[in-house]
Length: 149
Image (cartoon, rainbow, N blue to C red; front, side, top):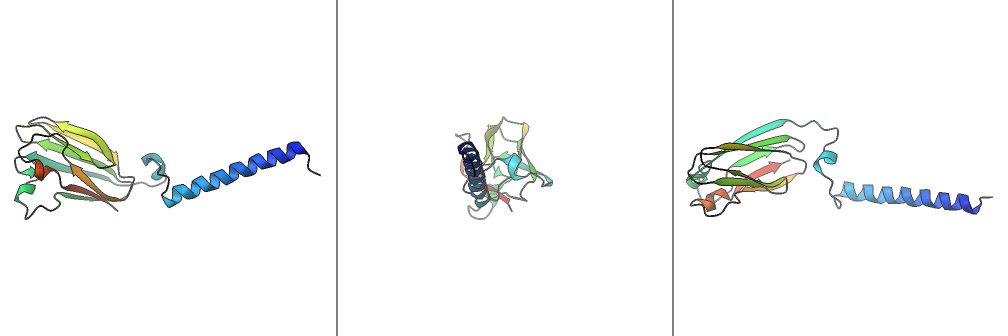
């Protein structure tokens, strides 16, 4: 016969196991998001480097592209290590943010080049855009995209 103390221990163990199973299920189903380190454990992605040139032509001369579509487009795989270099050949300050993946603005003054580094831990289409306002080509620095598959 099981005594009261043993019942309490078994109940606590059962509750803990149940909680672990529920949380694990929520993580795998995507309801609970985990950070980049946990998402890519055991996956060795490639290193991918891109350069975006910011000037009066927009990002990589997006002003000359037909229409106002997405430009430039960068494609990577999940768990790749990504570097985006922002080369500012303009006289005004430019910046970039990569939606969800690198939200801290990278601000680059005239004639400088800086880079943002991050892990592409989540699949999807992420907007890469300028955060600094007051730019003559602002509309052409809003539509870059990073695709993570």
